[in-house]
Image (cartoon, helix red, strand yellow):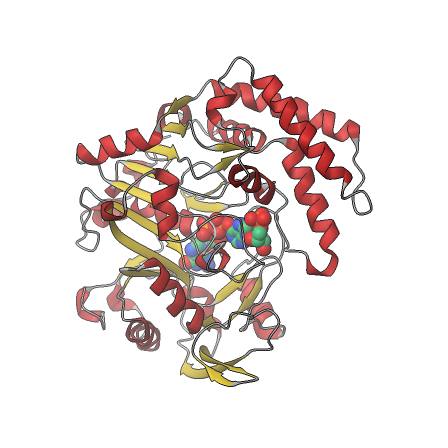
Length: 457
Ligand code: GDP
Ligand code: IMO
Ligand code: MG
């Protein structure tokens, strides 16, 4: 399949002035609680780049792309994989489950994507083994009501082994004594699992079956091209290659800056691209922050603007807000500006991309949470103990547009009320919104012309 030449829109996009790609690494990342539409936009932007690199997270991610009537969901493989000219790199900051990875490879091969030719894996990326997944389950079971709502993909336990200096890396998978290293780590995990006995019963037959799948996945990984990715990426930069780092999850799920402890176990923010790829901070170019025109969250944890009513239900229905990885219903609510301001600050966002504007077309009024009301009065920022404190959103109302946007392709066509909403957000965040997405398909993407932007570009 050559998806690349099939769409004139994308050729237009590729020569547009907004993305001033240089030999720095641009970063595209989510500003909310994940699922902002990163996969779609990375695919749309890929014609501008030579390398697409994932820098953190793992199979907890589900990145959806749609083109030519087909939907694709990627978990660990970067979202540039459908383009003929691009190298896709899985960086050292990523945790790889060979089982999920092998399934992704098979699904792509079935679609005739020559994935092996386009894919490189870092020797230093960590490996998720079956007992990491069991530990994830046991840990969640032990938390009861306070569970994180993890995807149960083994993310927390594998990053714990990384920072605890027990982990196995892709380089170890290539070693001749890999099986004995694996066995040693598994024994440690079995010992840890005993501590969870009142919450979790180990099913040996299940573990045996998981191991068979795991070892088969390991064989598939061994056949891929494994590289010293930090050298690869820095040499590519020197050679003038254009690189886009693709984030997973979102800033509010960041291990340091998210709504801890209801977060994931990696740095999802821009700094994570430096450690997760081995690029120096002075090599970072554009930081592209992507957000939904409203907010969603999947799993537990604070969500000040959550709507447990018909409005939230409509957002879920029209936005098809069900998890790409677990199928769970996503919680929905209005846009949360304290969280957005915070995410823009932490990431140094230089341009914004607004997704799913079409989902809001059904509402007469759009609400924007500008502040929170807390026991101590009105605050502009997320409180430290946001989980324990009862914070309620303070809203400003803006008129809705009630127009179907899904067929629109030019910023001049956007209804005035939507443009007002966009300009409102640009002014509040002091960052230009350069792209507006009006549907899941790659073609349903609108570049905002300079004359419509409130903030200089
Ligand atoms: P990611 O994890 O950030 O890549 O996002 P997901 O793929 O998990 O979730 C985004 C969902 O919204 C996917 O089902 C996309 O196909 C869909 N999507 C992306 N952009 C738009 C849009 O502008 N409008 C609508 N209606 N759906 C979109
Ligand atoms: P993408 O890349 C949305 C959430 C989980 C849970 C918490 C911790 O598709 O945006 P973990 O499995 O990491 O231990 O889960 O983080 N979560 C995501 N939510 N999108 C994701 O990825 C997510 N990855 C993890 O639901 O609340
Ligand atoms: Mg997702």
